Length: 127
Image (cartoon, rainbow, N blue to C red; front, side, top):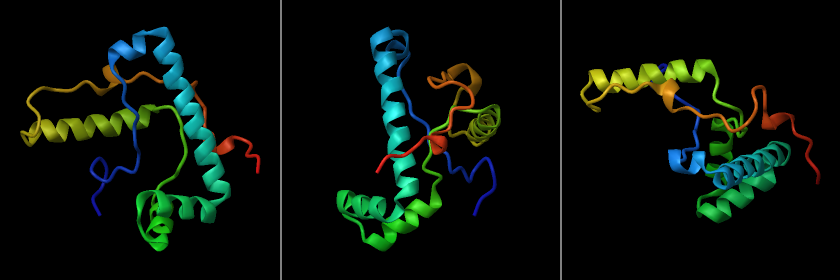
Protein backbone atom coordinates (compact mmCIF):
# COMPACT_ATOMS: atom_id res chain seq x y z
CA UNK A 1 0.00 0.00 0.00
CA UNK A 2 1.15 3.49 -0.78
CA UNK A 3 1.22 6.34 1.66
CA UNK A 4 -0.57 9.68 1.38
CA UNK A 5 -0.92 11.40 -0.95
CA UNK A 6 -0.90 8.27 -3.11
CA UNK A 7 -3.20 6.01 -1.06
CA UNK A 8 -6.39 8.07 -1.08
CA UNK A 9 -9.71 6.61 0.03
CA UNK A 10 -11.74 9.75 -0.57
CA UNK A 11 -13.94 10.34 -3.58
CA UNK A 12 -15.00 13.73 -4.85
CA UNK A 13 -17.96 14.88 -6.89
CA UNK A 14 -17.12 17.23 -9.73
CA UNK A 15 -19.21 19.88 -11.49
CA UNK A 16 -18.38 22.56 -14.03
CA UNK A 17 -18.02 26.21 -13.07
CA UNK A 18 -20.99 26.93 -15.32
CA UNK A 19 -23.21 24.55 -13.34
CA UNK A 20 -21.97 25.84 -9.99
CA UNK A 21 -22.76 29.44 -10.98
CA UNK A 22 -26.30 28.59 -12.11
CA UNK A 23 -28.65 28.82 -9.07
CA UNK A 24 -30.97 26.08 -10.30
CA UNK A 25 -28.18 23.66 -11.17
CA UNK A 26 -26.34 24.44 -7.93
CA UNK A 27 -29.49 23.63 -5.96
CA UNK A 28 -29.90 20.40 -7.93
CA UNK A 29 -26.29 19.41 -7.24
CA UNK A 30 -26.78 20.10 -3.53
CA UNK A 31 -29.93 17.96 -3.63
CA UNK A 32 -27.97 15.09 -5.23
CA UNK A 33 -25.38 15.25 -2.43
CA UNK A 34 -28.13 15.18 0.19
CA UNK A 35 -29.76 12.18 -1.50
CA UNK A 36 -26.42 10.38 -1.60
CA UNK A 37 -26.01 11.25 2.06
CA UNK A 38 -29.28 9.53 2.92
CA UNK A 39 -28.33 6.50 0.82
CA UNK A 40 -24.95 6.16 2.53
CA UNK A 41 -26.48 6.66 5.98
CA UNK A 42 -28.94 3.86 5.19
CA UNK A 43 -26.11 1.67 3.84
CA UNK A 44 -24.15 2.00 7.08
CA UNK A 45 -27.18 0.83 9.08
CA UNK A 46 -28.08 -1.96 6.59
CA UNK A 47 -24.75 -3.27 5.24
CA UNK A 48 -26.03 -6.71 4.21
CA UNK A 49 -28.96 -5.30 2.23
CA UNK A 50 -26.74 -2.66 0.67
CA UNK A 51 -24.14 -5.25 -0.35
CA UNK A 52 -26.87 -7.38 -1.93
CA UNK A 53 -28.14 -4.40 -3.93
CA UNK A 54 -24.60 -3.46 -4.95
CA UNK A 55 -23.87 -7.04 -6.02
CA UNK A 56 -26.98 -7.17 -8.18
CA UNK A 57 -26.55 -3.69 -9.69
CA UNK A 58 -22.87 -4.09 -10.54
CA UNK A 59 -22.97 -7.79 -11.38
CA UNK A 60 -20.27 -8.71 -8.88
CA UNK A 61 -20.17 -11.53 -6.32
CA UNK A 62 -21.75 -10.72 -2.96
CA UNK A 63 -18.42 -11.31 -1.20
CA UNK A 64 -16.78 -8.68 -3.42
CA UNK A 65 -19.59 -6.22 -2.72
CA UNK A 66 -19.16 -6.73 1.03
CA UNK A 67 -15.39 -6.31 0.74
CA UNK A 68 -15.78 -3.08 -1.21
CA UNK A 69 -18.10 -1.67 1.47
CA UNK A 70 -15.48 -2.36 4.11
CA UNK A 71 -12.89 -0.42 2.11
CA UNK A 72 -14.85 2.85 1.97
CA UNK A 73 -16.38 5.09 4.60
CA UNK A 74 -19.67 5.54 2.69
CA UNK A 75 -20.36 9.00 4.00
CA UNK A 76 -20.68 12.47 2.56
CA UNK A 77 -18.82 15.37 4.16
CA UNK A 78 -17.52 18.71 2.90
CA UNK A 79 -13.95 18.87 1.65
CA UNK A 80 -11.74 19.69 4.64
CA UNK A 81 -8.44 21.60 4.74
CA UNK A 82 -6.59 18.31 5.31
CA UNK A 83 -8.18 16.91 2.11
CA UNK A 84 -7.03 19.95 0.17
CA UNK A 85 -3.48 19.60 1.51
CA UNK A 86 -3.29 15.91 0.55
CA UNK A 87 -4.71 16.55 -2.91
CA UNK A 88 -2.25 19.42 -3.38
CA UNK A 89 0.63 17.06 -2.56
CA UNK A 90 -0.74 14.59 -5.09
CA UNK A 91 -1.09 17.27 -7.78
CA UNK A 92 2.45 18.46 -7.06
CA UNK A 93 3.73 14.87 -7.35
CA UNK A 94 2.03 14.52 -10.75
CA UNK A 95 3.61 17.80 -11.88
CA UNK A 96 7.05 16.72 -10.68
CA UNK A 97 6.66 13.37 -12.47
CA UNK A 98 5.62 15.11 -15.69
CA UNK A 99 2.12 13.60 -15.68
CA UNK A 100 0.60 17.08 -15.80
CA UNK A 101 2.20 20.18 -17.30
CA UNK A 102 0.63 23.01 -15.28
CA UNK A 103 0.65 23.57 -11.54
CA UNK A 104 -2.77 23.02 -9.99
CA UNK A 105 -3.95 25.18 -7.08
CA UNK A 106 -6.34 22.67 -5.52
CA UNK A 107 -7.85 25.16 -3.06
CA UNK A 108 -8.96 27.40 -5.93
CA UNK A 109 -11.06 24.64 -7.52
CA UNK A 110 -12.95 23.51 -4.38
CA UNK A 111 -16.54 24.61 -3.82
CA UNK A 112 -18.30 22.99 -0.88
CA UNK A 113 -22.04 22.76 -1.41
CA UNK A 114 -22.71 21.41 2.07
CA UNK A 115 -22.12 23.36 5.28
CA UNK A 116 -18.99 22.87 7.35
CA UNK A 117 -19.37 20.04 9.84
CA UNK A 118 -21.96 18.23 7.71
CA UNK A 119 -21.57 14.45 8.02
CA UNK A 120 -24.04 12.02 6.51
CA UNK A 121 -23.12 9.39 9.10
CA UNK A 122 -25.02 11.48 11.67
CA UNK A 123 -28.28 11.42 9.72
CA UNK A 124 -31.22 9.57 11.22
CA UNK A 125 -32.21 6.56 9.16
CA UNK A 126 -35.78 5.36 8.73
CA UNK A 127 -36.44 1.70 7.93
